[in-house]
Amino acid sequence: MAVGQDNLPFVRSSSEWVAYFERNAAELRAIPWEMGAGVTDAELSAISASLRGWQLGETSDGSHLLAAARHYAAAVGDPEFIDAVRLFITEEQRHGGNLGRFLDLAGVERASSDWGDSLFRAIRYAMPRMEIWATPVVMVETHAMVYYNAVRRATQSPVLRAICEQILADEVAHIRFQCERLAILHRRRPWWQRKLTMGLHRLLFAGITVAVWGGHQRALRAGGYDFGRFWRAAWRKMRFAWRAMSPNTYCWQPPQQPPQAPQQSAASSILSPVSVGRGAAAELGRR
Image (cartoon, rainbow, N blue to C red):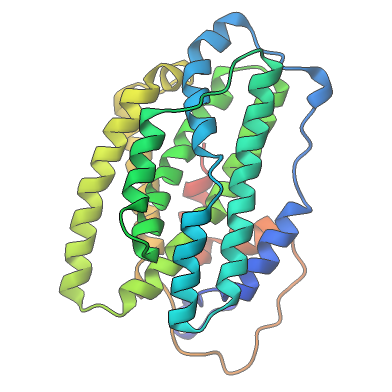
């Protein structure tokens, strides 16, 4: 990954993100659908209700997010950002599609409504601004890193474990994608407004953490997380996300010449440790 002064990384351009999402779509893990659900009644009892709600949350058509992206892209003159957001939405919908297919295989009816999903959408729909969208998305996806690891640990189903592993791999880049955009937005603010923003973030994150535990504790416990472990894991990952959305993490001077990108997989091109601060990518992906 290209770095600038003081060995700080540059924020990736929208065209780089488009290239990443396109490459990632061609490098997906194999899911052994032919094996069937492969889940026991005991495992399903612990995770099915929770999984139904989370699956619903992954199935948004993204129309409100695209509207916010179009508004933002027009304001900053970055039309390719719309394409990057559209591909991001496609990945989220793939997650929902795979989870839904698993529920179908397991004979579990898909959810048509969920209080947690409704609350999350209400927060995002409050105002069509990019920051209002990106902030709760980062927070929920940070919790998703813990949640899907718990589900993966709670079952021996090859299909569900493969689905969770793909989602976990994708979410690290999703968090970085949103954090970079927030870093751009936060850069325009004086230091005291950034401090105030981070304080509000912590209040919101604490509330989301409690809400996620309240709605999904049975599945989390099945995966080895009591409340204390869940709280610590979520906050540990979010601290690295906050580092990734800090303007101080990046070099804002344009490079002297276009960097020559090495040939590497989509995942490795995004998850270089320097991309979100040393050790952050590894921590976000830690299970």
